[in-house]
Image (cartoon, rainbow, N blue to C red; front, side):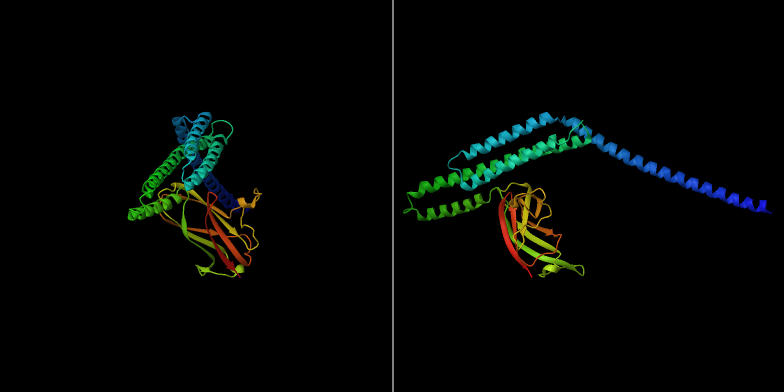
Length: 320
């Protein structure tokens, strides 16, 4: 009787073993196919990158030479304009700022070119392709910007010449003088906006989320985030492309609220936020949020917005 009872038990064990074996085999096949699919995808991406790299024939040394030549040509053109003794003062300031930003761009692209050590890997190819795009953009954007500055200076000199020509006839042609003053005022206003973006309507709201909605709150211990809103105005002479707007939030004790101050030794270099926008010359409404890691202190706060170290606007708010 014991032998007969053992036969069904062995049969069931064999069936269970076969089922587990088949499940294990299917799982291994699934994992293998998934790995093979991902490996093929990565290989295809690397092949595309290598093809683009070979088509452009990118080389560190030749790219560095091209970058240096473009930077020197743009620098020479800027210096030629700065050498004009009658250069409009606002334009001189903008060109000096452009010289500094050009040097910063040169350092950034040089890092891209030389930042990856070793053989020609996919990582290096990707960096060189990015550097190639940056060099092309640097040349086009700066050449366009300098051309606009030169045109603005030409218009300024023409208006100046007209004003001087008619200065001796003020008593006889008073109406013409008034017209020239209005035209010169409009031109000066246009020249003053060259280079740097302009903003309006800066507001700061301390908020918290309550029942799925944002609620403005003035109690320091209940504030969750700061909502910063402003409008970037359109302008003809402002350089189009990627623009970086820096935000500095200064606490009641005079410190700048920031999450990354480890490598900074100068408080003037500390910013709360740095965000980039794509500027196309048209008006844009911008909203930033800042969430402090600690509880906000009571008192008066000051918020400042900068574009390339140029103060755009400032506002204050208080928490109780």
